[in-house]
Length: 130
Image 1: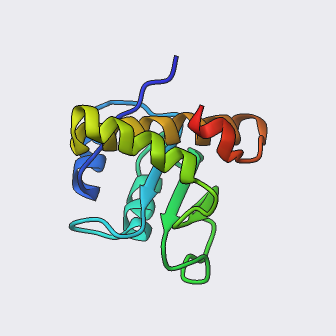
Image 2 (image 1 turned 45 degrees about the vertical axis):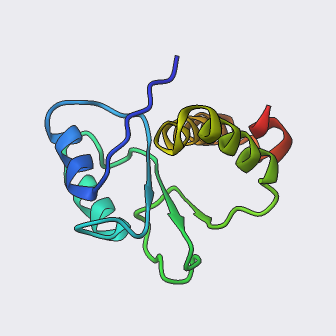
């Protein structure tokens, strides 16, 4: 199965890595507390065992600002055509609260992106909301 770990900041993410947790891929946002996604990616690449780990950036600013070869992929926000996925998350929020909905959505997106990275499958919004 797939295990998803969330971090509220770049430093928290680094602590997970430095404390011996291993991840097959890292998905990060460009804008985070304490450091941006580019700085986090550079610091992850400096950790032994993470120099070739797939890093995926989520950015509302677009791809132009993200240069170099730190990232395996860049997804721009908002992801168009995800109304079904958003509706699914909002149903969870109404039932269990926004905090749980955010975690559920992060897990769903992690599963989708892991599948995309593993086998080159393109993103399909209908499958994401199922």
